[in-house]
Amino acid sequence: MKAGIVGLPNVGKSTLFNCLSNAKAQSANFPFCTIEPNVGVVNVPDPRLEKLESLVNPERVLPATVDIVDIAGLVKGASKGEGLGNQFLGNIRETDAIIHVLRCFDNDNIVHVDGSVDPIRDKETIDMELQLKDLETIEKKLEKVKRASRTGQKEAQKEETILIQIKEGLEAGTSVRALTISDDDRAAFVAPLQCITDKPVLYVCNVDEDAAVSGNAFVDKVKAVVESENAEVIILAVGTEADITELDDYEERQLFLQDMGLEEAGASVLIRAAYKLLNQQTYFTAGVKEVRAWTIPIGATAPQAAGVIHTDFEKGFIRAEVIKYDDYITYGSETKVKEAGKLGVEGKTYVVSDGDVMNFLFNV
Image 1 (cartoon, rainbow, N blue to C red):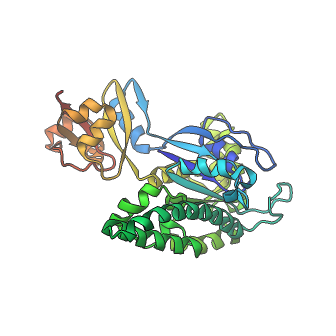
Image 2: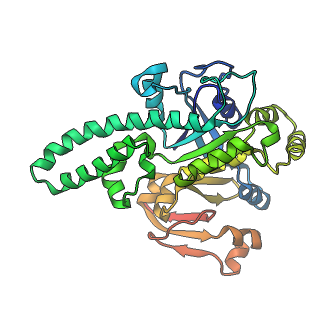
Image 3: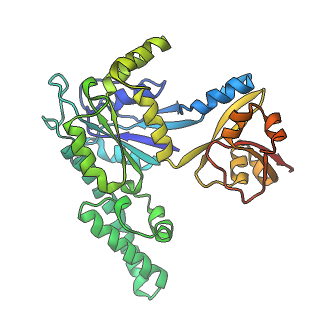
């Protein structure tokens, strides 16, 4: 699962990527610094993993991860190929969610591609280019479906109705994700289209250090505009976060954050938000060899969770032994959990909860 960082040139995308990933994207004060998408595998910060480690004392600990993709800046006309737009839009289409970076700070030393700072205008520019690209997709599909619809195929007629709704929405400046379409129709007709504006989105307001805690007037405007989208907005002083990541000493980093009035690095908050945006959750396995966080989709069943470890676990699934995370912490070990009668034995229909500590029994 991949989340793509998008935005206009020079809004702080590559600097943010550097904060999130061990991979170092080139970062410079001019447009199109990033051309090929950089991909970083980012650890998901999870205090629960640290607590399990302290109780089990394993040989190694493996956190959950999420892929973050740094995509080059889009400009007006990208949907028509301007500024390598076709390539960049193709890169976005390959991601599962969008992290949209908006510049919300004034700095005369950092040029803005449009000459002035206006995050709402910037958002509209990106939205329009993504919507125009989706409109191309919808119009092509609609031509084929109309021919089938005219022959009286009921399924085609229903699909045509949905496609026309999407087309009219895009033409009115409404992204696919914001349209009122039933879950069944989305699964049947919308999902296969892989529309860019159907991907879930998270907005990152890139501010200066003074606005890192409570934001500023730019951030207030962004929150007001995206309210109808049901999208999360995160405030992040990207430049300052970049300075923090350069500090080798953990205590120095914490002191830096405290001076800013922050309890933890904004990058950690963003990574967890991106993980949630991708509709992912975590379950744990805990043994002396390894304590590990495993990534599964929200709503996954026990056999599906087992399959993440190995396909044979899913094929030959018998049952799962499940300990709720809070019970594990309360009693301190698997043995004591069993003695307290808190270990659950679950079958194939069990839906895994975030934080479950699990052990699978299988036979192939």
